[in-house]
Amino acid sequence: MRILFMGTPEFAVPSLRILLDHSYDISGVVTAPDKPRGRGQQMSFTLIKEFALHHHLTILQPEDLKDSKFISDVQQLAPDLMVVVAFRVLPREVYTIPKLGSFNLHASLLPKYRGAAPINWAIINGEKESGVTTFFLQDKVDTGSILLQARVNIGMDETAGELHDELSAVGAKVVLQTVQLIEFGKAQPRLQNDSLACPAPKIFKSDCHIDWKKSSQQVHDFIRGLSPHPASWTMHNGKTIKMYRTKIVEAQSKEAGIVLQRTNDTLLVGTGNGAVSILEIQQEGKRRLGIEEFLRGYTIEAGELFE
Image 1 (cartoon, rainbow, N blue to C red):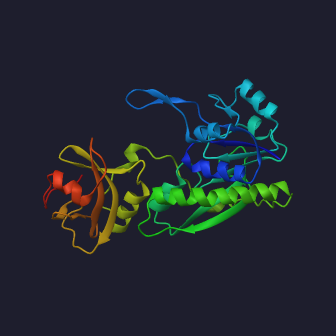
Image 2: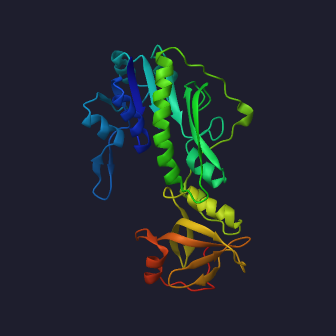
Image 3: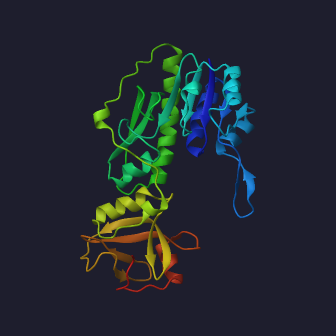
């Protein structure tokens, strides 16, 4: 069975690796075009491309997924099945090419958290459980018939980055199982229940501003749900301060956002109903630090405000 794999970020690499490890014929890999990055604007390419180059796989990097040459290139690769992991929305004329169909791996328990940022939103919303879903592609994003799902528990202090890595590994196993079901004609797709759907839209910097008036649990979930990317932020003396890890503590808040306690290794900040202790933080233009190291070089005192 010939498989065309589509993916871009680190999340997709274990899925491609597991298919190669099980000797599947990868007819090609489709990933994002190379882009200039960093201060020097040097050209860099995706982690999927790096992996594909190492394994001498055919690589396609279309700018326009509806371009006739790209569609022709895909047809010439003659895939029996298309596997999509963390890629762009595919047009019908592409995902209908393989005779066995095209399926996507999504980092949520569909139909919950349809959209670009399912991992972030699950944690921000205080979910205790997440997972992955494979589903056949159709025109409307993240709505196709479900093939397989796997569930994972979300820890009380788990960050989006940690859940991302866990789901990437679990997802690779589900991708393999899904390919095997399709290969042997045992797949039993089931329709999604649209009434249970909830969105997980792309997150922008403006969405990441911490609202200290919310409860301690909500603030804690918000910060870990955006850690390490795109990272929650607050303001102090005109400087942007990013937050990465906190823990909820028992304390009486005098005012939301106020520094309740500042010692050599402790920074407690008031919330709408209590306080959180800041564990990892980053000053604008500086590197991310544990709170003790941060406080050695940053001036802030009890009674000051984060806004």
